[in-house]
Structures are given as C-alpha cells and as structure tokens.
Image (cartoon, rainbow, N blue to C red; front, side, top):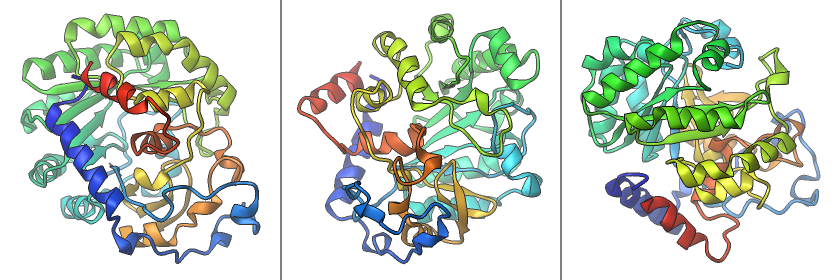
Length: 365
C-alpha cells in the first residue's frame, strides 16, 4: 500500500469529521484585505467564484519549522535568505508542541532549515508522536547517520530525505560535493534500523525528468516508502529566479513525468498530478498546510509572508484568503505548489466522477 492503512483511516476520519463540523472559531473573517498590496477592491466579483471551502477551513498538514539555520546553502532555498535576521533563532520544544496542539493537523512536516541541527528535536518528535500525529521529518541527510540513534523507529514517523537528482546534479544543486553519497548511506542505515524512509525531489526548469526516473530506479533496491515530487516554487528572496517554473513549464514537465506515477510510489494524489499536467483546475487551499516558525504563524502561505500571527486562530481569521490565488495576486500566477493545491485534491474540491475509484486504486498500489 502507498501509505499504512491506519494512516489512511485516520486521515479519512479526520477529514470527514471536519468537513461535517468545521471548528467555528476558524471560520470568522476578521481580515483587512488591504493588508495585501495587490488587493483588488472588486474581490470575488472579479470573475472568480469563492473557494468552495472558504467557510469550512481546517488544516491537513502543519509545516513546522523549528529553525531556519542549515549546514547547506542551496541556490534555490528561500528560507535561509528570507529569514536572515532570525537565522540563529529557534523554537523551543514547548513552542513546537504547543503549535502541534493548537493547529490539530493530523500530519506534521518538520522542515526548516535543517531540523537535525535542533538539539530539542528528539523531544519534539516524541511529543508529537505521543499526541497521535504522523510526522515527515525533512532532512538533507548529511546529519542523519550522526543523529539516527536519537530517534526510534515508529509506524507514524517518516524520514523524508531531499534528493534533486543523481549524484552530480544533486551535489551541484546543494553546492557541496559528497552530499548525495552521504544521504544515500544515511537512507540505507535508517532502513536497516527499521525506519520508514521517503524522498523529496523538487523539479526546476533545468530538471531532466529522465534523470528523475533514473534516480527512482537507482533507489529501488532500498525499498523506500514513497517519493514526493513537486514543482520548484519561487521565492522573491532568491536571486536565481531562472531556476523556477512557469505554469506552462510545470505542465510540460509533469506530462513528461506521467509514467513515473505508474512505476513508482509517488505520494501525490491522482487529482493533484492531473492538475500539474493541466488536465483539471484546482483552487489554492493554503490554510490546509499552515506554517509555524520562529516568527509565528506565517500568513498567507508557505511562499508569501505578508504577516506572522501569534496564534493559529489569528492566522485563520485575519488572513484575507479571498485576495490570494491565481487571477487575484500576480505572485500566485505560476504557483502550483503541493502545500497549496494538494489539500484541494485531498479534500475532493473540483471532484469528478471516477475520482474515488482512482484514489482507491492509487492508495492500495
């Protein structure tokens, strides 16, 4: 199966409960749309229908960033540049666990920065697992073998290792030789120790999709637990904007990669992959993957930061959700990032006949 059966059952139950009875305190609108510099006073009347779930908001995945420090300086990373002023700051273990409880999302993606630099991380992982959450611990892999003994294998813990291509390509992307080999050895050690291990690959303009296929083939002997494949998302803080993809680029890349979904255990849902290939439209559901870091709850999304709020309720009620998205904000025009659109697919927005059957076949493969 693509995911453990208990995980799929837990997520299905969570989604059903919240779609039937979404928490009322998250549905109020206390926003001032003029906080968005691209605010259009015509709002929803500008030829765009309201988001079908605008009044039923709830999160699916918490993007938890305990710190933004990293031992690599990848050319495409916005975090180490965007948060230069707080690059030495970190959340305490208590702050991390409070965010996990406050948000209530069933899945927590621990990212950064390089999370394994945080000495409090083992306690955060144990505390998050104790609260019944699923964890994707995202790492570049260079510190994983060193810290592997700090963690214990758990059915709800996935170690998610970043690989953007085969050795030469990946080491060039991260700006240091030997990183691919170290990540590979770390994944071998983690699998031997009984951990669930997955990979995360970002597709940029220069990415050769045949190399991505070759990468997944190369990793097959490790019997990994899944692969995340996502288009490169543009940060204004990154100078090398030529790295990133337009919508047309994304559609072309992922049409070329259609065969990968049939061959390998990709974590992207069929509806999201169809969106990436230009075969259906999805609205952005940015509140589905909220981000919490050293400055607070980032609003409106993982890529754009107009504000940081002290509480999750403030994020949900003070963000002018209707002023963002393709056709409303030019910064959103080429965005098809998983943390904005995969929640829409998972929640069945823009559902079609046959989607349920496709999702079932995808899940049990």
